[in-house]
Length: 183
Image (cartoon, helix red, strand yellow):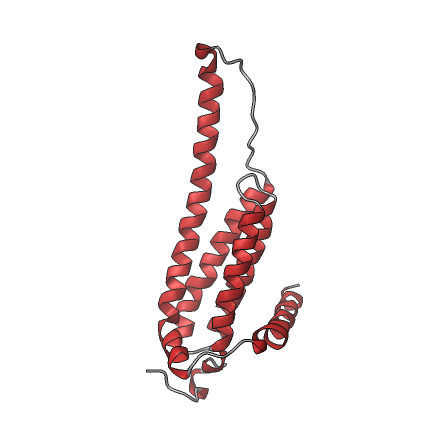
């Protein structure tokens, strides 16, 4: 199953490269080198943001549920009839948190690999942006997300993937096969 998933991701990479990103202008060599130089730091920052996002999503759900419980419990003091609101943490809520944690893992795991210009590090970042879109889809079915979350995740991932595909040539399967040294 993992092998088949990798094949699908490789096919998506080919489609994005051939059909979408080849139609856009390329980055200058200086900008590519700067991006390659700072990619480990960017990957760390994105991983940290994913962790913060997962905690914030969980915390927002906890706070909202506490507020609803408080208002239903104490509403009778103000003449408000008791009612039950169910903003449940459904399957997609928990799946969204797991996807954010997995995305953070991919970004953080890629740091040391992209420092050594290994293609596996580049692939991990690519996979993280695909997971980012899947997170947007999961949030579409959660009480705490919606179509706006999906659209934002899709646009951000496509823009970031453009820059990631622009520097793919700097990453190789082994550290020794590096053709260009980035300073």
